[in-house]
Image (cartoon, rainbow, N blue to C red; front, side, top):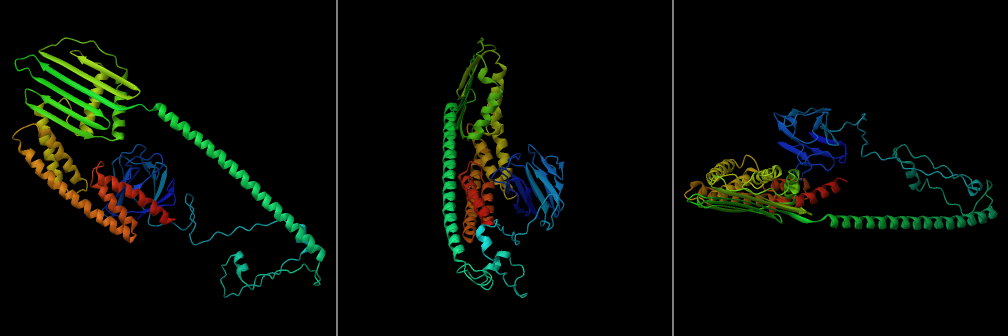
Length: 491
């Protein structure tokens, strides 16, 4: 079965559906990449099940419509030949081949049919009135090609009229005065033609220079605007410290620092003899997401609250310092209820730590951290045991093994720590072997000129790697190049 794009930016393109599935959306690792408006990063998915193709909306923002009816997110629907699918502004026809007749919505022009060439008809000039009509070309034999166009007859030597050496009347006598007049008119006409062409060229060059200067001015304005808006990159420092007044004098300290795309988290617990230091790298999109969450918390407009006195034998202090663009604010809360925006900012940092960094939030005690580490190990082991079931399972198992090692690093006599270290190394070796295999296949297909299979190998490399991995980034850049070559080849 195939998908034919009948509307939108990809109008005229087609895609052949191959089992087991094909995803569609704006992200580059989709089987079908969209570039228009209204499509989500991962919009919909086509699945082959029980010898039938089904479509499922992946919880997209604007939804997916099948024959005008909006699909329920994450619910598969069976496709039938002739179904129309609307994704954003892209209309897609699900069928084996396009109909050859003209429908209301689709106009088909067979590629092999040539459009009739346009013939310019000039109004008769005085010169034309003095020259008799040229003889009609002889008819072609019925054995010839009857579909030949009008202009093709003049390529035949037999059909081409012989040129006049001099103008003659019906009796074959030359008109020398008319011949001189004709030559004179031709000369004046030729001069006027070149003058006209020169004038049009000068006007076009002037318009081009004006447009170019305007674009240069606009680009300079944009650069100036960006420079004016540019400020400090995202900087966050959050510190939480609790000092107890009991005889053991326990000190708990948590510190998170985010600067220049680097995240460092340090935990110290004197009483539990627990110390942990973790590091992560985040990209610009993740930084932007965190910045938006902080902005929604309205922390930047929060005022400094009054400080209180220690209660119940604990001296508590929390400090958040945030800066981005031209905004900066630092709030210290000591032994007093924190403002609402302060609490919301901490919640945003907790969610970011849990969902993006895969690091337990600051509220966990050492015992809870140990449980989280053991839980991460069990999840990693499950993924590793089933790594052949899904391409992402292998790199996800490495991710969870790393999380388990980080959370269990500060503890002693934990069997899961040693097991996590051993399985992590084994998973990394398997992943490297898989990347090497698909990289070799990519090079082989590329040399053979099989661009579609070369692209598929790159897509698999992206699927089995984390988005921050070097192999993922290389495969992504290769796909961009291959897509351009495939489009060029179709043309």
